[in-house]
Length: 180
Image (cartoon, rainbow, N blue to C red):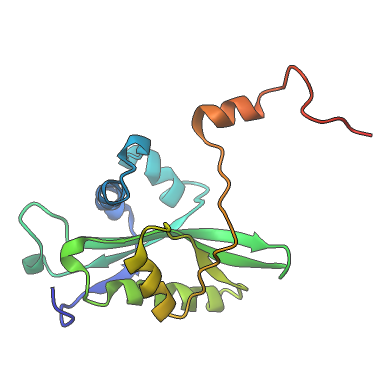
């Protein structure tokens, strides 16, 4: 793929849910996390386009003649949502995932997506734009740093999910702490 390949960056539409799910599957394969994958178009659709959407997405689309047979013209996606900074007392934009199909990397799509999201954060009056990166993804880290991002090495993500969340949120048989 050359940097002269044309692409269109636009807000995702309902018709993009299936291609986004396919790209999420490709992202899970890249990150070797397919064992965690539960996404389907039916599960994702209400969160992007339902009565109370909790996330938004951008997609990058290329002309039909630049994709392999059977592939969608949607070759990249970014899924993001609003978070909140108590220190700034302002909302922020959190990028959950950004994925560009390998065959379309190097065309400026990733940079265009990040720039668009940065502008969106400013237009909405947000105080910051942030995301996470896997520590082994040196290529992405270098790319983000070239774009002007600071990688916060002193922060760690804490997560409770699945069965662990069920157990965590259940009424404990014994209190985990005592109130004085």
